[in-house]
Amino acid sequence: MGKKIKEVLSLIKNNKKFLIVSHKNPDGDSIGSEIALALGLRKLGKKVYIYNQDPPSNRYSRFDKAGLIHTDKKEFNEDIIFIVDCAEIDRIGNIKDEINFKKTIINIDHHISNEKFGDINIVKGDYSSTAEIIYELLDKLIDLDKDIATYLYIGILTDTGSFRYPNTTSHSLKVAAELVDYGVITSQVSEFVWFSDPPARIKLLGDVLQRITLHKNFSIMIVTKDMLKKWGAKEEDTEEFVNYGLSIKGIKATAIIKEKDDGMLKVSLRSKNGVSIQELAAEYGGGGHKTAAGFTIRGDLETFKNELEGKLEKIVNKF
Ligand code: AMP
Ligand code: MN
Ligand code: MN
Image (cartoon, rainbow, N blue to C red; front, side, top):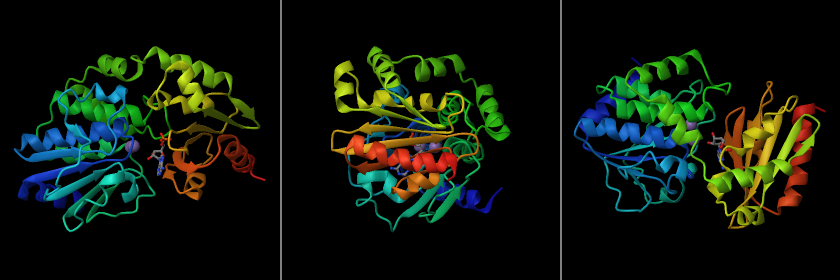
């Protein structure tokens, strides 16, 4: 057993109150990891509070029937703070100024770029998801059950895009298999995650796909505020749209630029065939992985789209 895992296990045993935090706009891995960890700690009789700046999107709120994830601030006086699935501390958003950094921070993440901001950092860049790491931790701590296994499975399933992305390894598949052995109903999870979309999302998707621009080896999609309004869709309905831009043969990189209410643009980047878009995201102050990264920037959509076209062209065609 790794020395750091041992240290975390003893911190858990010797403390009572735990805060669990993840990144802004939490995804399936954030939520799955947070809830699984919380349920595991509760099995040991610990007090746990999960806080995220933003609530789960409709897709993932279905999995939090017990309302374990909070977005309301309180006095944070927990002994130990787990920060999961965050490469940088700023990713936790508006709670940063209220966390008492004198408390012990345990940073659990799978981004290679992780800044190791914790007192203990368990960072595994070759793991598909944070859930895969939480599995190893909980497996040594408690008896896993169907409920906990389901949350961990959601984390792995969503961060691997249902085992399609290059981060799908024999290890992630083995962990997923073990989780299924605890009784995860895979068809139910799939239905909740991938087959329960609101009609507005599908209408909007049609519009977004119509407007995709195809360039030499890369593509760009846009989602304007007007498009959301036209179809009665919400920003969260655009989750995962970016993958369609990469699904075309010959396309090695893609971007989706989304206009937000506050005048910012949220950009998601994806790549394949050995191309890395991580550095491009970092150039704009964002981050992520080699084949999935993102950033947020202030600007005009059309102007920025032109700028991004130039950058992507250089990356995929290596001038
Ligand atoms: P997304 O495009 O939002 O699905 O994110 C893809 C990957 O990029 C995830 O691993 C995120 O953690 C990372 N990412 C997205 N936006 C940012 C950001 N503003 N700063 C740092 N990392 C980001
Ligand atoms: Mn995440
Ligand atoms: Mn993740």
